[in-house]
Amino acid sequence: MKPEGAVRGTFLKGRQMGLIVQKFGGSSLADPACLRRVAARVLETRRAGHDVVVVVSAMGDTTDALIELAHQVNSSPSDREMDMLMSTGEQVSVAVLSMALHVMGVEAVSLTGAQAGIRTDAAHRKAKILRVNPARIRRHLREGRIVIVAGFQGLTPLDDIATLGRGGSDTTAVALAAALRAERCQIFTDVEGVYSADPRVVPDARKLKEIAYDEMLELASLGARVLMSRSVEFAKKYGVRIEVLSSFVKAPGTLVKEEVADMEDIIVRGISADQDQVKLTIGHVPDRPGMAARIFRELAAANINIDMIVQNTSEQGITDISFTIHRDDQPRAREVLEKAARSLKVRHVNVDQDIAKVSVVGVGMRGHSGVAYRVFHALAENNINILMIATSEIKISVVVRKKLADKAMRVLHETFSLHKAPRRPAVKKGARNARKKS
Ligand code: ADP
Ligand code: ASP
Ligand code: MG
Image (cartoon, rainbow, N blue to C red):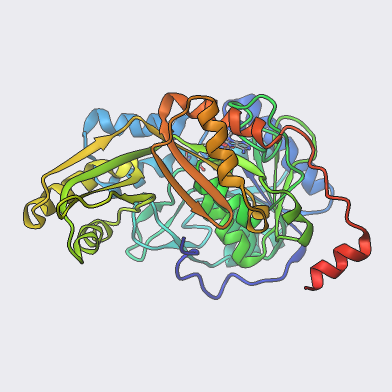
């Protein structure tokens, strides 16, 4: 996975004490009562002596509703117009939150992404933040205001509005925290932190006190939508400490931070599931050098991210290649492949929507063997068939049938006893220090 593209200049390591960036997600802003609660929370932070920059998402399910509206008018709307439309959700939130703060007698000012100095590349609907010019935010802070910034959006080199991909307000918040060198970036959401698995699927999932950037990055990119994965890449790169916590309940959350030696004592930190993938199979591919390169070159040119890839064994010079992509990319991928199929002499392209990817993640896997066996054995014992497998140093992913994904998560959660607080191996202080040095 590539770190956030051409980030330059304005993102510096080191922190400005006292400044906190707080991000509130859609569910924390669902209605006027929620807005007032958020305003009170922001005010509390301000009264504790902090400068506060707030980043907000669209209220409730506004973004979904806007997407649906677009599709009622045009079945394949242009990405530029979609961004123009979707960015309005966050603009409503900043204005009404600012108004809620004004009622409380607080000076607050709302800014769009563009007004906040956020510049992106030109990739509409999945734009990357290239730089932030925080001058205007700083001026408002100096003048004693709480600054409220619309998440999920920025301005392209052509001065068009671009959005950052679903969940993108997390990335806005971390990018601002980096650019402003904030002391901390707090992500307020509808659960109390990062859990060992989605608490809505695994009821005995445990809230984690802390998690390493790399673990969070894997969990997020493998489907745990509590943080957008790009926000974690950013945080890791610029040393931004993220705290994930509830906007409804006052309780300690989860700290996402650099890895420390004893994090490796825990083999599996968490489990996630990605229900948004589809599997494409290209059948009857001539088994010659260069075929895979040609197929994936076409897909790369269409800006389609490929996830897992499996090539079957060749029989009589013919093979199959299967791979997974995000379901939003499916129409474009099909188009590209069907066009390429003719020149590549490939016979057919099959799409399987009935899949989900379940992954176990932990930096401790680096130093422990047998994890893959335990995953496969547990799934087999529970009659869950594995369709694809992928591994990295710190994760094992399997593709299973969609309806079995939740069960697979619960089975694996149980297998690795993730509901229990981890027991550190009994290592004497001196011994642990000695290991750190080695
Ligand atoms: P927001 O609107 O605040 O951005 P999201 O819906 O994007 O909130 O993310 C929060 C949701 O992420 C939770 O409600 C939870 O169901 C889901 N989730 C998935 N995996 C995890 C996990 N490991 N820990 C916590 N929440 C998770
Ligand atoms: N409103 C956008 C979405 O629903 C961005 C966000 O919530 O972070 O994806
Ligand atoms: Mg989110």
